Amino acid sequence: MHHFLIALATTPSPTPTPSLRPGLSEDQVTPGTWGFVLTAFIVLLTTFLIVDMVRRIRRVRYRAQVEEASAAEAGNTEAGTAEAGATPGTAVAGGVVPGKPIVEDSDGDAGSGAR
Image (cartoon, rainbow, N blue to C red):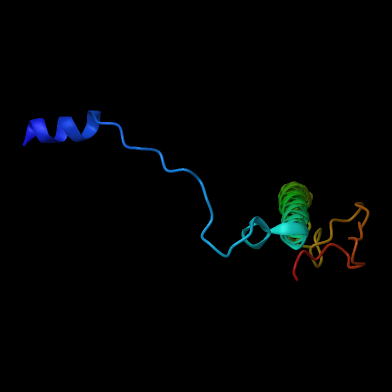
């Protein structure tokens, strides 16, 4: 059995000559102009979708960093007002840190982050 497998592996097989079935022309089996246009459209669409996705992910990461920074500053502000004798939580009303400018997003809201 082993000799049979070695003989099959070492005997060269004849290479078939490339030809089309009778009745077919080369134009009938190639994608042509419309195939190229459709493929190029799909590539462009995919590229734009990937760029948009990366931009949105970057925006979400940036908003998370800003929220963490403002939460850390709010924690510092609350601790400072508590030491001064004020009640905790008065420094941050509605999630806005006093003395910090409110930055509007591109859609016009005041940085709510919720969609």
